[in-house]
Length: 317
Figure 1 (cartoon, rainbow, N blue to C red):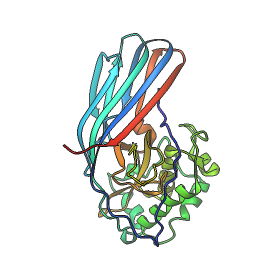
Figure 2: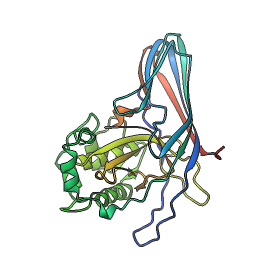
Figure 3: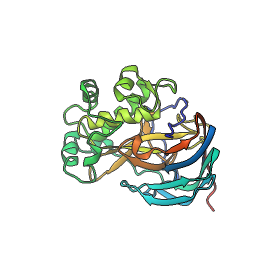
Figure 4: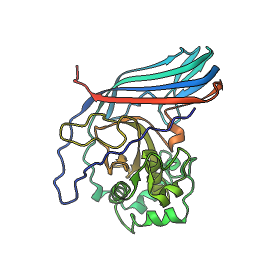
């Protein structure tokens, strides 16, 4: 019962290096609702699930209120933090049912990121050497379930963005923009199990694929990269175009740019640095660490799934 993100394509206009940079966005408070409904052809007699559906706290994100509702109500419901510090909910249902609804509601304030001086970040070789010996970065350099060891094609792809001595931030930004420009957003091209090698060859996919591709590219050179699960603003500001991945779970990447800059959030699906349009749920090595909802059931037969996400800005109280 693993849920792939629902995905759609909306073009995004990006400023070129010769255009003026937009002014930083103010902090934004959001109300978000994420509803998942299962309908089964036969009765489910019991079910167990793990949910990453509560937003994590971090320096740029404040969680004001979160609520998770499961119908039928579970016999066991516990909460904890996982290895990466993400909130996790475990539920066990013993009531026979043919429909299951999981609703996550939250209010979150997102602060804009500080300026990112990509051109003054250390050379990528220096970052790779530092990351190999640090406890907080080394596990994000190693292969993981969805991002295995890089093959020759991925290594060659990575080398084009990181020539000798290039600042790691410059290379990471170029990679982010190139994936956006050269890869087509196509919800029919891949599944949750499509390997990175196929995405690289076909140059089509969705936010999850592009995040895994970017992570694999960075790790091929020993650069730490994390997979981030979250949401995008549903309604864009007046006069702005809607972002790819809005109205659904979204995925992007954090790349470690050294002790001074730390982890920088980059969105390869939209070719840009993340800002107040992005709400963070969880981060880990890849999708398997932060899947929004997964579990096992007894019975049920075939099933259908409906996922609906709504993210809207609200006035602060």
